[in-house]
Structures are given as structure tokens and as C-alpha cells.
Image 1 (spheres, rainbow, N blue to C red):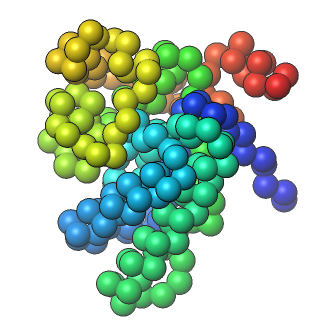
Image 2: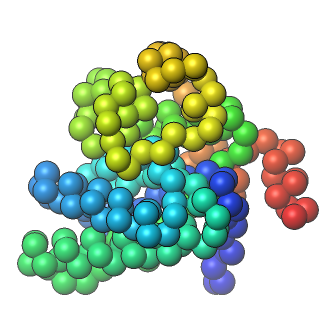
Image 3: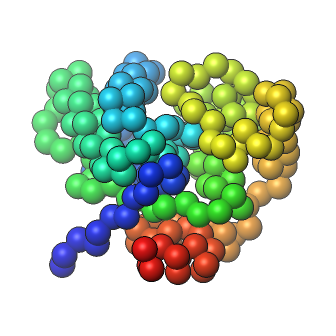
Length: 213
């Protein structure tokens, strides 16, 4: 079966998911996660990608990212990142073969409502997985930067995030309030479904405009 064509647009956020091959572990030790974030930082700078949110889980990764100019920068970033980290992981854990599934999942994110739902979906992943009862207690997540103001060189705030408050403290407070209630199950299902299919997580109007481009 032919692969579906990915659609990326300049300055338009994308939800990216990369899973371990056969759901295998991607991070054995703390040093592995640190190394992955270092590689991500280098790759996003090289290919001019802004990272708005992320979470590293035991056997998969979620990213919310926007290409600044060249939409193909997303694919280039993911290729370099996957290759470098797999080489590192195999060397340090005395293994061979592919670490990640052959193809990462990706979907465009539409209007502000959908963007903030994706922020929450990503950073609440450890809570839904039962690893913690609060997103702020999980170490490998952008929640610390977006909600608590902890400096993270990886994170470039999206324009919609910057618009929720007049200063960092106000933005963080408004952002934390988003996490006071869970995402509706239907929205969780929609994010997962559209990401797996590579379709936009957006309104019908956004999808129609995308189709007509």
C-alpha cells in the first residue's frame, strides 16, 4: 500500500509521535533521555523548527513543533534525530537493528482550541499512563517550561501561548488552569485518530481550506 503524503505548512504546528519498534523501550536510563533532548535541540536548530511541547515516555515520544519556513524541515529533523539517537542507543546498550517504528505519525494542528488541546494531550500523557498524578511531577516534559516557567532551551512559545497573558507569570497561570479539567474522551479519541491517519486535528473549515490549497 502506498504511503499517504504528509502535509506540512510554514509556521503551522504539527503533532509528531514516534514509537519504539514493537513498542520496545526507547529510554533505559536518565542519560538516554538527556541525550535524546540534546539531539532534538541540535536537530531543531539545524532545520529551523520551533518546539512548543514535548514528552518522553518509556517507549514513545510526542512533540508539538512548527517549521519556521521550509515545511520539509519537519521530516529532515525527524530523520536526523531518529538516526542519531538510534545509533547512540544501540552503541550504549549493545544492541543492533531498528529502534523506532519505520515511520513517525504526524498531523497538522488547526485553530487555537485544537492547539491547546494538543498541548494538554501531550503533557498529560504521563498522568493518563499512571506514571504520576500531576504533570508537574513528571521530569521529561515541557510542562515545567509552559506551566511553571522553568527555563528550557528547547521550548519556543507559540504565538497563541504568548497571547494568553501579558507577562510570563500571567501566561503560566492561564496555562495551568487549562489542566484543571481533563480533555473530553471524544477529543482524546479525535487526536489519536487524526494523528494515526495523518489528517489535520482541526475544524472542518480548516480541513476544507487545507484541501483547497
